[in-house]
Amino acid sequence: MPDAELRALADLARRAGEAILEVYRGDFSVTRKLDASPLTAADLAAQRVILAGLDALAPGVPVVSEEAVLPPWEERRHWRRYFLVDPLDGTREFVKRNGEFTVNIALVEDHQPALGVVLAPVDGSLYLARRGGGVWLQQAPALGEGQAEPPWQPLRTRPLAHPPVVAGSRSHGADTHAMLADLLGTDYVALPLGSSLKFCLIARGQADLYLRLGETSEWDTAAAQCVLEEAGGAVLDLTGRPLRYNTRDSLTNPEFLAVGDTGVDWPARLRHALRERY
Image (cartoon, rainbow, N blue to C red):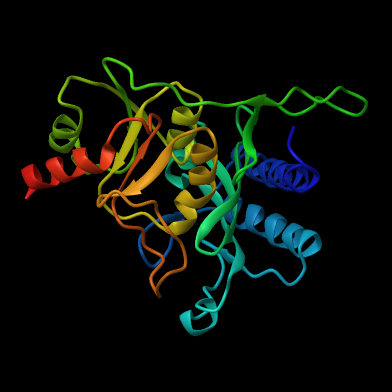
């Protein structure tokens, strides 16, 4: 079972999810940030809930969030422990109203995700993970006062399937087919999906890998990386090393591969695929 700290973060994620759904069920406008990515009232509402909640749960622990002002590198470089948050991961999917968006809350310690919380507000699926302590899925919240809490289900990735199921981004169009063919050496089943749900599907043993070519930010991956790693998987840069956090001024991730079956020699396959790519 998740411990008290994780369950408190789970409650916070659900409150943020409720704030998102209030906007989602009505009419809302979409503005554009400087990088041209979309922003809605739901992003900002979830941000307010999460920042207030983290301040109450862990006063003094710094927070980096997509929708907040980024502290300067000269300050961040000295942090050993901080929260990394995406209040609404998958705003493009939110705008499309397809339900494939999440709330992501991670605690990063010594450049690694130590806690991960991923909530899919529309279907209520909630993923909780602690590094070295396991990962759980709760399918839906309790329905009301006095209702029994739904069970927490431990998760485990599966051995690489034949053909593999490859989760891919629904809204970001980098062509991964050639590299996937080199990595897998076989046909595969493509499964488009939004936000960090791709990692969660691998953690549940319903997909096998996710290759991301092109930019992502650290808040897009940290919580889901913890979920996937605790389920037995890995998130590797294209040199075969695990993604790390807060190691430089930029918060842009390198290109990466998320996998479920760590018994496969993915670093060797990546070296082969990169030789073919370049």
